[in-house]
Length: 542
Image (cartoon, one colour):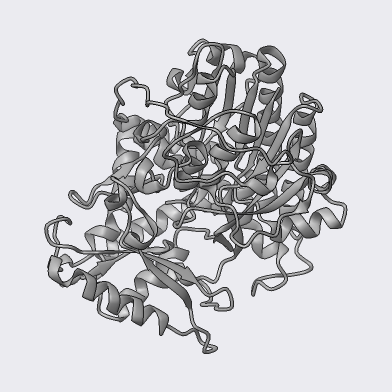
């Protein structure tokens, strides 16, 4: 194998460094000591959908067109789901295949439906609705892999139920088992197909960072040194370190190994959960009165049943209700927030838990109230007000705010949200509003821009920590991987070669590469959207 990429979603040097130094992560420690490492800056919205796609294409989201897993369409106000097939730009695997390398990918987000070249394979990741035939390329690989690793999947089953019921230990155990199954699948594929290039991504580190951060970080207000879950996040990282060691058995002295993350993770200030509430308090967003008590009581009853009833009993109830009725109930909950907004009196809006704000722009949004001539003025006022937001201790809540035209360029920049909010890491706003707490669980860790990059092997300068004036970005991986493998770099990418990693200091070769045509992209069915929504909801993304 010439190139091995292992993705640890949301991995951060804030954990990796101290845990490698303490001897907890021996495999990563060896790769860092013998190779080179650095932070790796994410896309501006610090989201897996945009960042992994930029890692795979070398393009910024304004050009590849993907920002999030799911969002509200400006024009229709309906929820839409995005997948790899909605992407613009060629994947790294295509560039490699054109230059004679065989490729394999496993569980990489935003790769559904799967695509592969002759001699290669792909098994889609988190954006796939299920392990259906479109998730595998070639399609016959589905039966083959699931026969060998029948428990392989993207995420653990019933994860949302476990978290809502507070069953942390059981949830962690399900992830540990899944890491083992995902690694077994990777080993099988590497052993049988022996590709020149292989990439796989583990998402357990992202889930662990979001949900277990408060148990690991003594600075979190809910940290308890006596908690039985204190080492739960470390346990997940240890399992991932062991998985990396297993995959390294398929490399040799000529293999270039990269361990990367799409973004980082850190203590959740709680601010994003209060952002919608803040917009209401400042008069930017107006919501109608809550629905009648009967509906609220029904929702409370469903939440109680979800938390208390055994999983098997809940499945029986679901079967009796019927899938159609369950979908209707979920849709009602999903749309209740947006249905509560008084759009005529709303100039800007967001959902609790998001880092973005959208302007209710006339001519673009379905019920737009802000004239195009006032767009910049409203953005500027919002940015000023956000920078003056203080927590109870007098700390600024917001570190900075950027407009989309400042951070995205390209044909699809208009798909982006209007404002991106970056939180002051010293601020803390306490527990989320009751509306969020009613969902049963919320995150204690939040995305940060600083991911990780570790490089090791032939042609990679063994200089340990890279101290560059400008940290590498996710856009830089495609040109860097190609160059260090001795291959030509396509012209027109947004990324640059990380020349400090090149032990040979060789000149970069560029080549014009026309984009190949692809099969017509098919829209997701209602059932596929339901399955994706269910998965994202269990992970806490909805």
